[in-house]
Length: 131
Image (cartoon, rainbow, N blue to C red; front, side):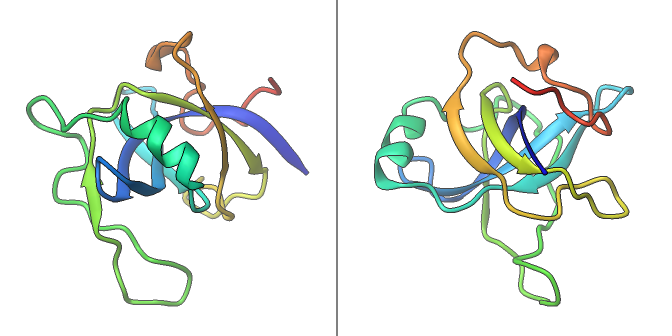
């Protein structure tokens, strides 16, 4: 089963000018941004649109020093570029989660939700609402 929900963009692969995939997060009840999953590869058009909204972090980033796995069963890590975590993305996700509460399958990006503040995104651990 798939649902449409929102997540905060915390980092990207590629570059700020040409993001390839999104590393998505949600805040937990203590106010910490937790990694929840990665997106599928962005189309060129989506990459160009998103690039206009991404900026480097202002000050310390909650994921500074973190490493992100390139996939199941691999020791390879992603080259992640941290971004200011203030852009909300609507995504389509499979409801399957791993033992840490992260999405097991890549999220499919739909659109930037400029009308939603990061505080309105469901909390880490919430199932996510149908939009």
